[in-house]
Image (tube, rainbow, N blue to C red; front, top):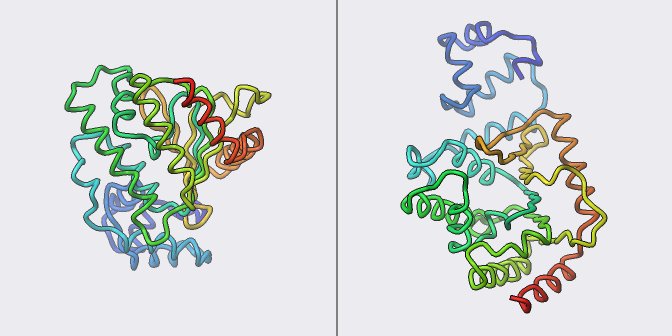
Length: 264
């Protein structure tokens, strides 16, 4: 809003009657902000997008102690950023090539995935990360109106045996169970598909309460990367749309998973 209005951080701070360092700290997420001050800033910036202002105000009002606060200082900050994205999302889409999505993993499977990371985590760290991932999954069940969740999973991820055959079998059973949930859509991209859009990098797209709050999260060796530039978001939506066009139907996906289970 500030950049669109051509207002400098110093000017914004003066309009708000605060120290000039507060605006950059608010914008970076280091300082909290109230719904009232969001509306004040929107007024100062001449923002007339009422839906955006109300969405931001709603997020500000939703602040408070959360379960993930217990993990602060124990896990990287990006873990908390992902949880907050999921918490505020109205719908989510994910594409994975190598392992099943985190929100659909069993605890045993999650431990096996963390055991294969580049850094050799001590057992306590693996357990901490797995426990955090299990708590994240509550976003799909505990809210009054849980977000819609679409998972596009390549057949390679379904066949990779993280933790061995028994862990994989239980993981596939979990996928079959979740695929029947009303807010979850699971679609596989089979080996027979004539390719797919993109490089195969895992993509997590969180749809916010308004399009301006959409965010893409990408995994990298150096940690999470978050993207919110409008043009790049458009490109990722197109990529996911094209990938979904190559995917099996939910029913055919369940048939594929059943066939893989029989081969284990």
